[in-house]
Image 1: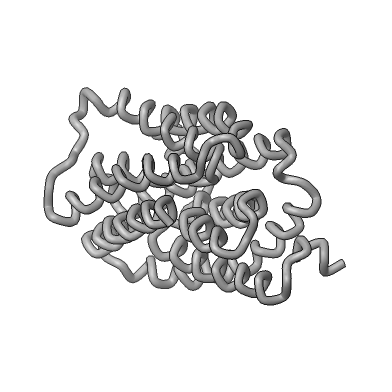
Image 2 (image 1 turned 90 degrees about the vertical axis):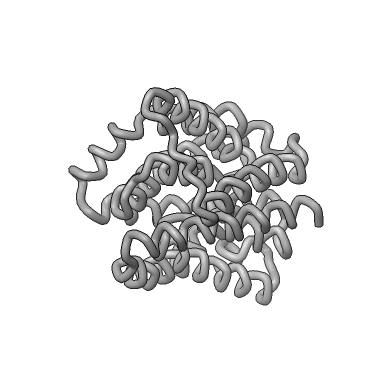
Length: 256
């Protein structure tokens, strides 16, 4: 019965996966994102690529369910309507790219996402204004949503393009957190559906993914406690700083 959840991993590897997921859940609770980024980068060290991607599917789904509806159904629905262009583009992008998860070199997609994200976040930290002009917002939302979806289908990561959009449009803390939860939730459902079709999500890999939901939720609720105590300015600085670290880590993984 235990093998259903461990996917044949050694005890050490399974416990390491639980610990990484606990930490990833905490970071997500505190700033609203980075769970798949942390899981992908850490799991790549000791897990096969297919198990690493499948393992993050259910923890991502359940934590985003909590995050999206934390302020209630009404605000979540309103947020979904506000960012509908991004959502539609993400879902289409995931469906298009998921079948190619094993075909695209890992180094390529990590570099193509990691470099621009690092540059963008670093410029914001240095005080550069990168606000999107009002008349470009709809077009930018479609483009960034498509980029996020295309990357999401092959890597399980579609958050950074959304963060770029939210930071560039000056979204406040609650709006950023809720928007991330709603977009990531719908993206997680699309990712699960796509990989049920590709076969990457199967009885063995989803059992492992289900086991990771427990530490993910524990970490998430501890992170919520921290998030509630961050003011708007500090929250944005934490978000920008974490994006820089995330981007640099993706570049490191690509070149390793």
